[in-house]
Image (cartoon, rainbow, N blue to C red; front, side, top):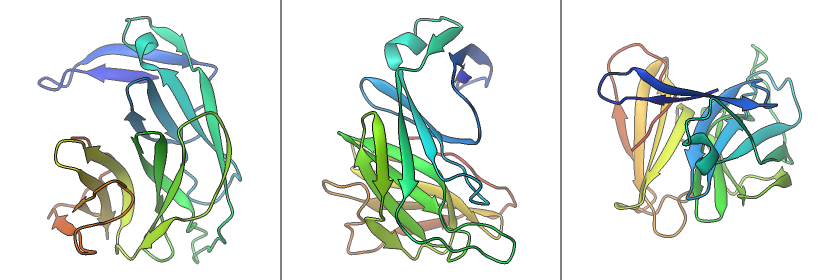
Length: 200
């Protein structure tokens, strides 16, 4: 289900069940002008070979109907080699995505190297074989992403030793590529919480 929440009170205004969708491990959500993208991409222990992103027409969700259908799915598999740490956790886990123009940007949560790889693919139905477009030694586990069209800025959220960290960087035409001199700004928070989502 998707939930519409009042930002001032936190109360749920609307619950919309997505018929026929399966929640194996929903991790992030993004929107463009036409669709809501729900990323069923969590894969901590590499228990599945194919990940799913549901595309749901925005006009269906905002009508107030308590149940809607998704229109189609994007399915994903990785061409990159996988590494597994001593706990069985995967370098190809993913929990963060954003949609920009006609592309989806998926950020990995690399349990092995504490880096993030960026996978870019068309924002349309079908199956995509993924290879990393960029990899950043970010020294944290990335769990959420969003972008600000006014400031041309990307924000990633995650955690290091279960302490939340926000990373912000500027981009020109490609939100998967850090363009501010190869640098990003880190904002660590000093409380022990596992942060999972971010939104402008």
